[in-house]
Image (cartoon, rainbow, N blue to C red; front, side, top):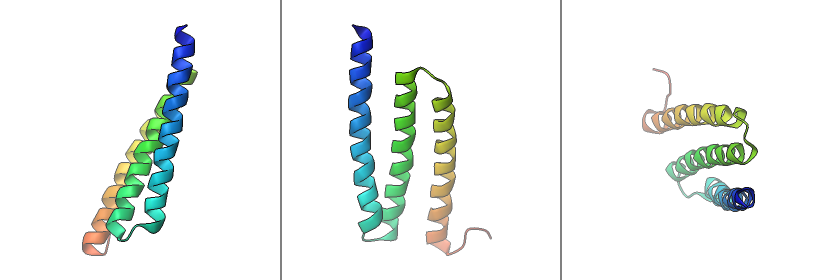
Length: 93
């Protein structure tokens, strides 16, 4: 009984996160400003990380949690670098 509930919850969560990823991708491609595109890219990193965590919960493997950690770290660094580029026009001073 609980395995069926877990499978259903993971499936519904993955579908909803996939829908959110599609919406973020639309904002990346048709965002009116660069700031909107960067925020959508940041949201897509977070959604991809959550999808990996959800898939890791469903499969029971720990490798997905490690991949989610790497994605979150790289996403944060990329967001900071892009924000700094938009503010000053250069990343490395």
